[in-house]
Length: 375
Image (cartoon, rainbow, N blue to C red):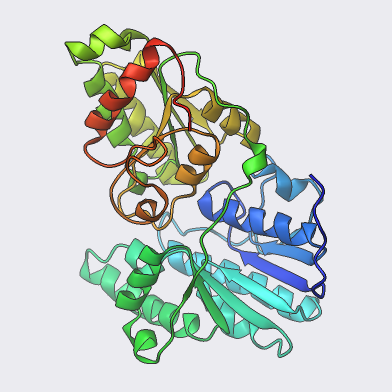
């Protein structure tokens, strides 16, 4: 579809992202860059890591340039000091942008706020910070040493976040969390604006389903709670009675797909944990794992599944439910966080909330004819 070009002035835009891999935050940045480029703006992404074998296809398609600085710097030191290393890598990228590139009209700093004061040294540039979620809430503060380690990092996060010309968050849930977490900023009257991520509606195929197949799409991280999908699916296989009369549960499958990076210890460990769980639950032969699938592969999985399971609790926003609904698929999600803003129970046949097992049962009658409800 041909886009109508905007009459607004064309801008030079820089986007700084710590690691341009595969995930919801990266999807947002890539979609924003594609859309801005389509309106004639000059977009340039700067990052500390970009693996062309594990990225969204648009980042290597030449739609906009991607420049990598600082990939030689360590991501951790003996699997520790992740936050310090992430800050150092991002600071290096910011310094390269500061000294090696002319001024941009707008610089969007994503996820890591420590770069904001450096970028503001480019006096003619406006700096926007996109806060997906306060990092201090994602970090562990379980021991005295960790609390001592995190104290200056947490203070620096709040201080530098407040220095941006504009702060954006991805949901009302994140906005309320922002206010409760960064109390000094809230007291100063600093309020972030909510800018929900969006999806490209044109990329999805017509929905169809050849079998009773459930789909979970998430990065292989423990906070994504993917074991809930495995446990619920295993419980579904133990059901007796009316469900078995309306559907052939013996043929049901669960596909778990998502971002996977061999460099990340948690990704490797969690995948093995999920495989072991499926083995213990007796459904190893019915659970399929797809690591770092391409956009086309993900869209194909969406078109063929019966419904999508979204398992994180208190997810900051959650792009997967939007992608599922854009592909005309119902979503089963936890009743918390960003998905509460995007999924309406009972509306347009998208079911959410209740126990995961109960919601799976509610979808089973559809499987007898392999038809998706008309949306």
